[in-house]
Image 1 (tube, rainbow over the protein chains, first blue to last red):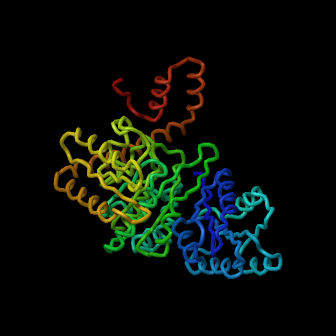
Image 2 (spheres, rainbow over the protein chains, first blue to last red):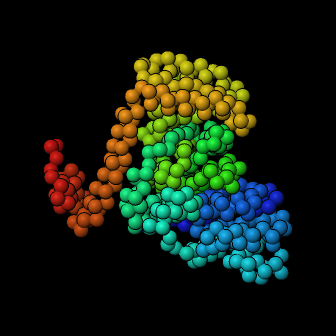
Image 3 (cartoon, one colour):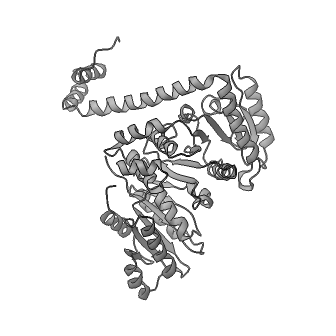
Length: 133
Length: 312
């Protein structure tokens, strides 16, 4: 009865730079996780609807457009509204250091900056997802 | 579990999603869940979409969903992608083509990894179909993994199986081969604006001319990205369903489906119970030491399980 970790990798906002999201998706796959990738330019509403239908354990968001302060917390709030507040949320991208405390306070558990290793991300997910129904 | 079932039957998305996870991960409570849900199934139209990787199955599925929604039908989708044979992980990317429906409450899409199950579907696909069916979806679309020649499990499940083909994959000998080409109830020649589409069309038609009796598959041309030919394809799908219904094959098909479901569980269960026997390791050792044959080993295991010896 081994439980596969399911992760949604999503790109909220309007930037089309998805190399990072794809690299992370691939790394998580190679770590034995099931990764749902939905492509670029997703609204927070789409991301949350997808996460609920797929019953994922975690959502990783990548944003390089600068809109992270608006989009990331919105996803967390929508998750709570839908009764899925237990989903582990993390983010990555071009995010100024001074924005990180605010994002964490709003429920983004971790932020990965350029240069972060995929091993760190994998370990973070393994250590933090809540197992069980 | 009661909450989950009640939620699912009353159309709650989160309950349905959680129930699917119980099935997918073989969690405790699965049997009870299926017992509650099973009597409520049998109302949905099951549509299979299969074909080689890159043929446009997801894009076609997306457009078929849109067409069904225009007709006011609710849709459940199971999109299967392969698991890595090495890490066990998977990238489930079929949804990328279907995200226009993410916020439509009449559409529920679930991605499933094969988890090394062969045959083009994920191990528990059939049970997940039951859940979507019980949740009241009018049409359930199962998009298989990109198939080669022999992954044909979908045909045992679907009322209508669409095989998506594209020009340029091979000559007429490929079309004459057994396997995927034989399971189509409906052919969709996708990317039909490309060179070779006419040739493929006539080759498939020629192949079908040699099919005897029964109901001959119709062949449609589509350009899914441009939404060309989808209306005709969807009509063709339901026309096939209606013909099967009239012909009396349907009872046959239902019985075969039930049997294949039963068989799958039979195989799983016998395997699981046998592997759980404490003498199992010892039997393996004795086979390895050539003391007994594998056939005799199985006989010993079955004996332990209290199963009677077969004829052979």
